[in-house]
Length: 420
Image 1 (tube, rainbow, N blue to C red):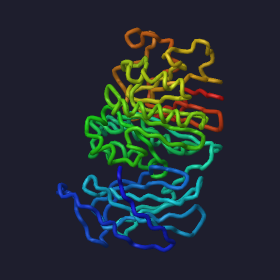
Image 2 (cartoon, one colour):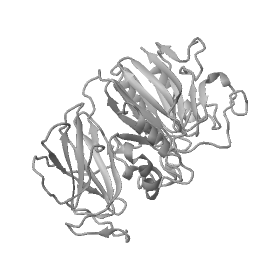
Image 3 (cartoon, helix red, strand yellow):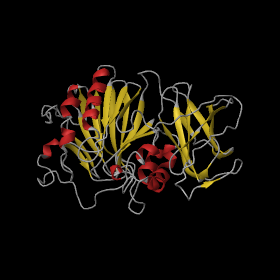
């Protein structure tokens, strides 16, 4: 999003005007005068975490005249205030503040204000800035197909299990189909932000689009709900010793396919040998033994992945869990690998995992890798589990650990490690 954010950093509490652009097409949004307290419609959520900055967004019940964030380091008294901006979207009730000049690997507590009124504060409103070196251990969660209709969704279950983890993940990945049925902005609050509000307020989230998100114009919906790197459809960012690449697999082919694939190749080339790990995530699967077909536009990238140091490829789409054995650039399983739980030296190999039961599960399908109707070649599967689930990945130097977590019980049902 092209959002111009004016930043003022001070150690005095000040009130500043946001000067919102009024969306006259909205007849249901109330405009309230300065001094009147708006309601908090959407809890704050975190984006664009870096060693020196982060973006905080929240939604109010009415258009306000100002918004700002007051924050301070853990165990310190000095407070900093940063002015924000009203985002021209959904009737101009999204409030957004970008913080800069933070210290790396530092925990901050924050309060949010709109129209001069404190709307949220407390011990759960905090964030930790990213590290500025490649030696810091970290973890993240990943899941796709999350924000289903309220009656059929169990999105609150993975959110609860993530909150209960002994060690909080540093951020999360959204593997497409973020909001059902058609990715409309009007469904984001009830389908996604309410069940995940306790996670999003202190853990940054990086989603990519899925085919359902594409059923409504992403430029008017998906892009406006998030503040992501690059053009927000496909982008990259780094954390410690790892390069993350998010792709937009659209619905049957890649968004701006030639441009995106060229960007992917260039991103991998520019960053060659700079990072210990490369993780790609997108919505559609390539090869699969789930009820979904094999998607040729994803399979066409196998050679690029394998020849450029990609370690993991994470996707959603099939509402189930499936981990495949390591693939080479031809899309063939490496038959020489015997231990499918402890990998070493996976050079020119990558592991593909479907984690698509984030908020809904396919009730009409059961895992049966011996059934040729579901899986012409069951030998490609290392582990499958038809349960609501999310992935939890931790990286410490040159070792990566992966766990498949049951969203209902919190119990681990799959795990593997890669050591370089």
